[in-house]
Length: 436
Image 1: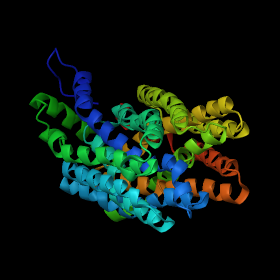
Image 2: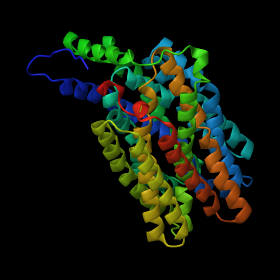
Image 3: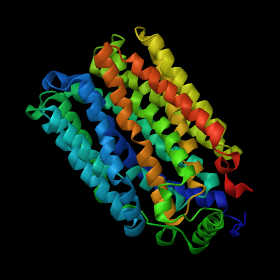
Image 4: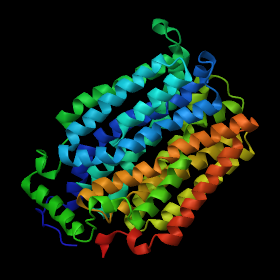
């Protein structure tokens, strides 16, 4: 692939490292705030059910998942608007509104308010994740995108590492502060950072390469020429065709399987650990950090490896099958804290490692408005699994008094995702097109 020559003291790797350092840490912090606000309801559940009488396991599962219905409704319009308005203002708008709504969860006193606020939170946050995936395509060509996505999505794992102990500590230490229960303080204290970061975004984030004041003209030219060379290989689909394109529908189904694993287990990990006999909320939080810590390492390893070899399909399949195996192990030994933690750790490693390997596949073949709408369409359809996953586990838990049956279903869906990629995604599509 043609590149623009740089001065002898500056290499292409130097330029992309510079871009990564100026963009990804900020996006990383934003995603920590977003993901924490999305899943802290799993920790709030440990106390909320005692205070709000009509929140059963099935109500909790439905409420945790209804977030993704709001997400689904507004995600494609949100990403198209970001393409028009610019990333700085649109991402700031998303973060401020979701921070306010997340903090408003302190007012939950019935299942209907719980449902309503979770739905509004999904509407507010819609577009953030696909917007960032789209934003990374403004800077990184496909062959470098696996590592970039891994670094950004590492926020999920780090949120598990720091968010679990933090949430457990808030539940324990802040119970009764200002007349609020621990779970109410949890929502309030973890919603404020999203608002503050949203206010800072317009001053810290560049919309595109050309507006980045921290790049010189030579560096901007290199980045733009590399992206233009890749654009020639991509699809420029009409907007309406995006919704019916067979490849995008396939990627949406595969992503559905990924998200089913992420949220089908993620919302329930605190409860699963508690069920092994760990009662103290802080201890639950500390143990929750272990799977996510190993998951963080796996995301970097799989993302870097898939970039290095220009191969996504087998990396994705191995990660998904490992995630399914971990779920099975954690359920078979659900009464043994050590064995269950080993299973949950393997599950989290596999589930998280699949994401940075997945996203370079569809983004390698989409361009222009098709990229904005296509990424959002894949993410919105796939994230419907965020509704079904927790609901399935909650429904089985209420029906059978055991959560493991629902988790076995989720393990099977992860295996299905691996099969779909190996059977129907051509190696040419899954490889980096700009390597040829």
